[in-house]
Image: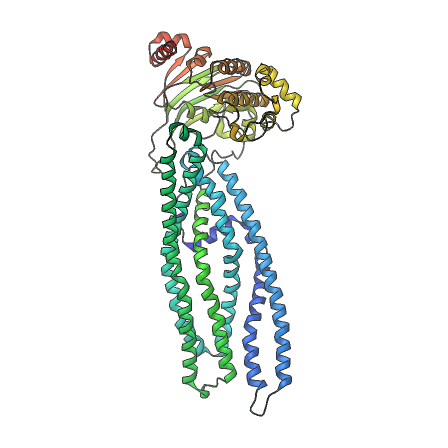
Length: 594
């Protein structure tokens, strides 16, 4: 996994964020030119005020035509500057939305291309927070803070240049008095960044806790522990609230800082001007104009103190977004992919090791250790073992949900690292332990696999698996609504839908993870019969929970603490008196007792 993105400063993080969202750079030069035009209008007005005082109110009397002419010029400049500033705001706002849209899509796609090892490390709630709340934080910043930084930044630069041209002594006084404000802001920034990083982390924790409570509502109610988990959510929410209060307290220190330094700066300029007197060559109009310019210079600084609070939140969110984008995708697509051979596909595991990234210190325990096996094309294999033995992980490696830490997985004699994802998914299908169904009808969930198929094609596949009798028991047949995550179907019925969906792909290799677990006897018979039809002629790897599945397989692989300890037929392993024999005896005893 990549080094944490938190090592970058705020400026570096913003730079990396701009590179991650290239739409921000598109036409930025033109947008900046419009912003400079808008800022120029605000700078010209103090100059026109100075001209009006010095030329429109001479000692001999008021020159109305001069004041009127200058007022007309001011009107035209303000009109042009307003149009330019609105154009800059529109362009930057549009580019910001395009950039955030691209960033959200890129982040979403990146998360779905991560290795299963990274999904095990990053909890679902935290990943959801990256796509939703963290990107939303960036959107809120660009809607106001980003615009303010760009427009006010250009204004400060122009005003500073004009102040130096007017009177460099007064300009230096203004800059010197205002300078400590930047050091104050810089010092507070460091504390603010840490505070908002902690606040965003606590926000992700709250989302994770809430996600678990909502998803596991039925289980919590069944065991009567809803109150305990509600208290966990309350504690997490309390920690989040405290974290944001701490960040807000630090941020609140910034607001009066700008006002205090503003008063000090203007006072210093006025006092210096009065002390220098008329002999300095500074006219009354120039003095008034310079005071206006000083206020113009200080206005962006005061606004920066407000923007800074929001900017730190955005930087913290950007760090977390970039942290996900810096995780290498896995498994990566090969640069020069190899096609899988036509016909049946054998599966080979050659000295395979694997570990999940749980501690981040590079010394994680092996889940699979030196596993070697060859499964000929068309053979049906059951993988058995105690919970935590690594059997599910083995199935994930065969399906290339992750790559082994060492060793090679080959399908059809081709290393999976050389096979394109599209080619592999067209030839290999996984039926997971808990099949995910989308809200909608059974038909919609089947067409998810092959959108171009007709209802007649779906019906034919159901008949091929001999599941017509089950479908006829449903209230609306193939149009029966499954509910959110398939909640309106039983666990076994969801697995039946998953088997039909897998049959539509017509794979050469089938990986079944606990396909007959947690189902009633009738559903198990249906599942077993459908599996037998689906597996016929295909290389099948069944992660078996019930040893009845292993008994029907051509071959059984036995895993124990990540190592392949036995390999043979059901009858051979029962007679061998090893791990499988003991598991089988215990299973028979529990079945008889039941």
